[in-house]
Image (cartoon, rainbow, N blue to C red; front, side, top):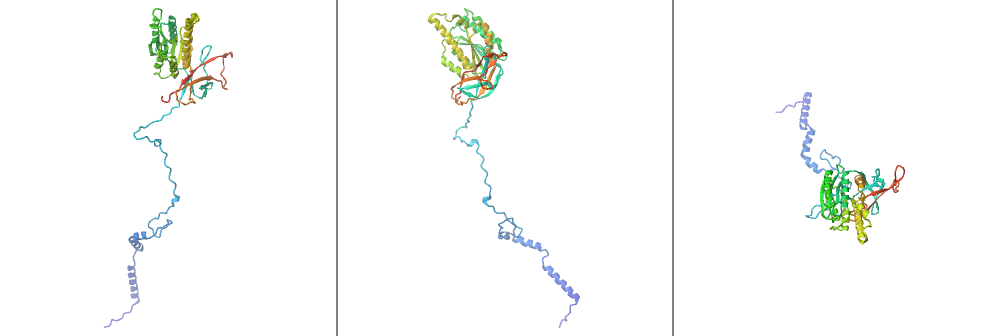
Length: 413
């Protein structure tokens, strides 16, 4: 049986073409980008390993990993220098040794200078630092500190009270009483007496009445027949003990030594006490000799060798008192009349309370304990010796009161 052949009409031909187009669209993926993403997700790891990294660091053919450019080692900056070692790293203590500290002290010298008119013993005010020149062992020093000092005092009256003679005891009492009369309320003063031994009359006090009461009690014993027990006077030992007592007190101190200056049987020799006086750094000694009237009346009247020995003894005593004062920057007095004592004490007070304080660092920095000689001069603005004159243009003579020297510290001090 044969099937009859049908011919395609134009309508049927268009429908067939439409059907064929639908089948073609079904065979093609709807989203080419999605299909590419799915395919790349399956092979991304393999592609990353397979594709080389560009040498210049630019992008590759895909949007995968970022390439890091290679660096030249020569282009790297030099490393920063290490920090400096700490002071503790400069030296390492041995095992078991403690830490040590090295302390270096620059020596400093303070010199109190009094400038007094020779005729009136008045203090000369108004001087400037440029008016002073100070020499140590002949070498000029640079003055770094300067000021005028006018302050309360700390003083010890060291008074000879022995059975040497009635006139000596009365001179001592008059001089000590005159000194207490010019004390100020802020001053600290103590009193010791000595013959063969030392005796404390009053410890340091600001009450001058307490000192005067002690003087009144001594006055009752000063008359003939009521003298002290011993006639010996050990001035060296007494002065040494006074220095030891004052060395415990800080600041500038003064010893008012009122005595004949004769030493009978001290344990210390003259050389030993002079060495100790030299070593004092902040103690100034003012010496007032007793028996001045007796020396004037009996000079050269002893007769024979005994009279010559008598005069020599007191000349040596005078020299000792003067040396104690000069070594420490003080002054020596030998009043003849009791009426001159107020002027003597006033001079001492002016010198103690009104001074110029000079401070310098010595050019010789060795701390070897040697004795250094000091000299102070006054100069004008041009460096010439300073000349003074009164209102009538008459020249005035003056004296410079300063210690003769000092002893340098020992390295171990």
